[in-house]
Length: 452
Image 1 (cartoon, rainbow, N blue to C red):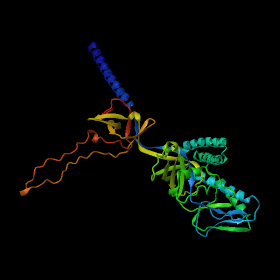
Image 2 (image 1 turned 60 degrees about the vertical axis):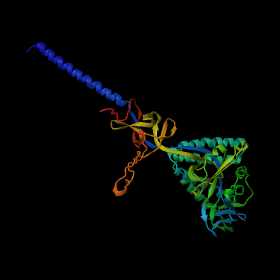
Image 3 (image 1 turned 180 degrees about the horizontal axis):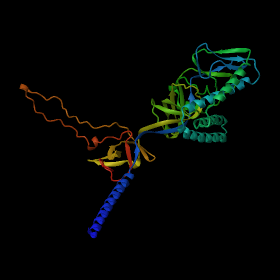
Image 4 (image 1 turned 120 degrees about the vertical axis):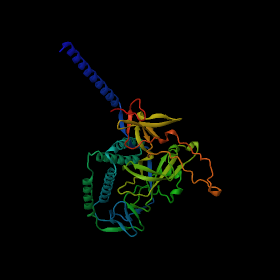
């Protein structure tokens, strides 16, 4: 056999194999290089809320209950418990060592505060830690400012709220499990103290159905009202500037109506965000508890001199267990919420359909690219929220009713009804939940195949 011929055959085979290898190598890397450039993100529902933080003043129908005799109070019902006409709510005892009443009141306040913190933590998660930390910073500044201004009463209230937030932060972040042990210890001490109370001088009996609360802060008369619809803007500001009423022998108070109110003072511009009759989610800073409250009234005064004065009154018919009705406390009011599919701004494209510019995104389904319409409801921090439509299409009416029949059963010829032609983009589906949105890629178009 001719050696030269064999050499040519071997060389031919070698070159052919090499050429095929190069083609395969280049092809694979081209496909890999292209598909590697395609990054997708799943479309999911997200919510964004706009909120404002304000100082709220609690308003309720309250009647102070006096002791009517000297002695130590032994409560017979729980704090915030509902009582009926004729129920015994407390005994006034002459017996017992000095200071028992003060210590029992101190214990009751501690138990109430710890239970409130635990209750607030139950409705919180680790994701709320950031908001709690923001509240801690704000309250810290508030305490310092109140002390510098010489407003010791407000500083004391803010300090108690700060302590509650610090404790709630420890529970939410898992540093502690709760205060069950501390509460049990305080209850045991209280029982020991109450066992020393003898010689009942008077038993307090209710004359009406109401909720009985231990705490009396001295503002009951200042925040009194007969009809919430008659309260004026001047009344609200007078309440906020009222002084504590001291010297009372009060041992508690009756709240005679389940409906209670939170009045916030603000400026006219902020007040106009609220609509009477609309419900808003309000988070109370001292508790971390969020309650739905209806905007009962928006009080503003028109005029240049009064632009800085306004108030909003929120109403609530829910009385949560272990909730602290501290007279003044910061609240965070959710003004507006937006919900939709969260999509990176980098994924949004504008595509021409006829004469219309259509906002949308490209999605990857298998190896095929599809265009999907979106309606942007909010643009925020590098992403957009898109209205979560169903897969809507424009339906064209193609049935105009029965034909008109003339004499002899002859069908009359009529002009076909004019129908409005749908826009070209009408058949393009909207983005759907869990669609794989293409975040960054070039040269995309509807129906493009991106790789084998």
